[in-house]
Amino acid sequence: LPKHACVPYSFSVEFEEASDLLAETPDAATTSGSNQLTPQGHVAVAVDSGGSYGAEEEVEESDRTALLQEEKQQPGFWTFGYYQSFFDVDTSQVLDRIRGSLLPRPGHNFVRHHLRNRPDLYGPFWICATLAFVLAVTGNLTLVLAQRRDPSIHYSPQFHKVTVAGVTIYCYVWLVPLALWAFLRWRKGVRERMGPYTFLETVCVYGYSLFVFIPTVVLWLIPVPWLQWLFGGLALALSAASLVFTLWPVVREDTRAVVAVLLSTVVLLHALLAVGCKFYFFQPLPLAHPAPPTQAASLSPDLPPPPTSRAHTT
Image 1 (cartoon, rainbow, N blue to C red):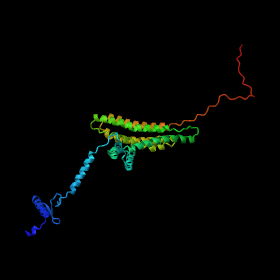
Image 2: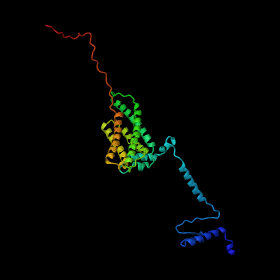
Image 3: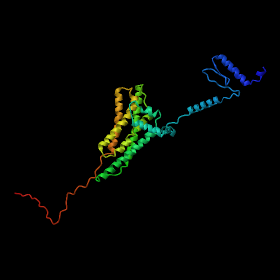
Image 4: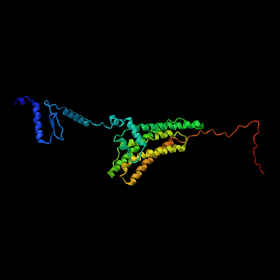
């Protein structure tokens, strides 16, 4: 007893707990270096005499923080904070989505591989603004360059084209996706297996699909008609293919007639936008009409007047 009388209390408590644990689990592995018993498949927890639970307090604090974040309410759609999240993207994300719209391929869903449930309005907003500005500027430059080649062409600045281009592009990017989203929502009630995209995802898809027309409009400055139509056809094919490949996973569960009509309508509206911009902003150039020559020429006073024919009666 004299030897065991000076054993610390904490060590004796740990030794008794280890003995009880060893009795319950005979296959436990002992560690001689730390004098702790660690059963196989369990995690050893060191209990000191002071009873400090710092790790448990940290876990409780992190749980409390997570609960507070979950209880934080999302801002309403009428507030600025609600729309601020849709502009919270970096340059790498925008460039990745632009590349995805320029290189469509079957089986590669733009929403799933590029948006990833995080649609943004930053890219579509600036793409539409840039396209409207480029359309108006190149439309005026076409007339300026043509006048330099042919002085008979009449040119005057057409500033109203900026307004026309902006209203047309923004209405197309918002109204057509709204109608498409509403139709897919209605078809979801008819075909339960259909899962349409959200409205903002549809707007995002349409906005990024128009990026290919920006360099195409610049190339339309080349005064070669067949080359202009070639560039326009390639841009239309890439842009329409991006829309069709993105919509196909959503509409493929519907009937063949509905799928054919829906995808044909999407492509037709896209073609009308491209062809309409081509004819309106790059319309045939008006020619300056010269003044017609005067019919009555001034006669010289030295010359006698022309003889007049008289009718002779018998």
